[in-house]
Length: 32
Image (cartoon, rainbow, N blue to C red; front, side, top):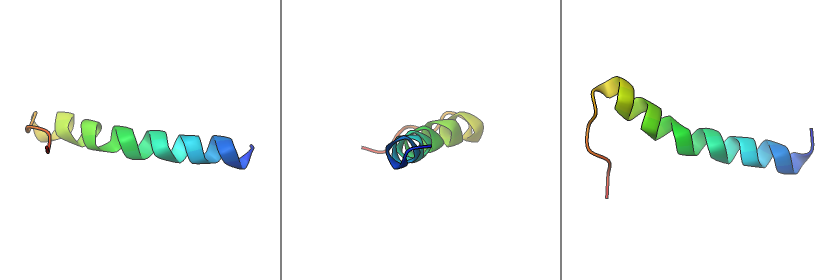
């Protein structure tokens, strides 16, 4: 894999993690 793809994948994971945690946590409101 190219370093660029690895960086994009890392950003995607970091971006999706809070949304997944909210869904599992019971739909808490997102931070401002």
